[in-house]
Length: 179
Image (tube, rainbow, N blue to C red; front, top):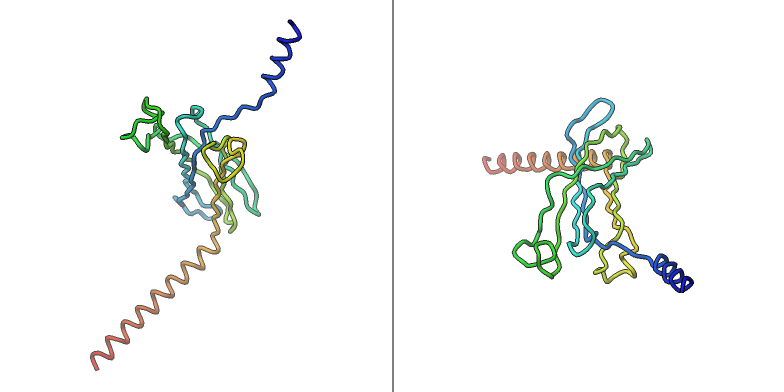
């Protein structure tokens, strides 16, 4: 009998279980201060949790790296979870249908004047409803944003140059119409 109980216990402990709450995520950033040696950014991550999955435990980590270095910081949850489909009965509000909650996280980071920063966040246990990959509950859900200050300057210069050409073209048209 002891061997049977021990065998059942070992078998039960060897079964992999997965929390499958990570339904989606997005990341954005905003420059809030430009300094001499570094710029300050507010990074916002929105995490979408399947209410049928594990409860949200409140901490996500932002990794950021470039050729100048790397670091990691915990993101702080801002406000409460928002049921994104409150008019439908779902696991989020006492029903039995699929429901999604949105959590918002933020962090303030200082980035040196490097031109190739990569910001990333990963969360374990993708939602098992995903049909495009095998065993999605075993996979991490990750989002990444690339902050290339040099590329931004080139785009800005191009936009300014385009606006200047349009302005000059408008002046030429006005002059021709007057003549």
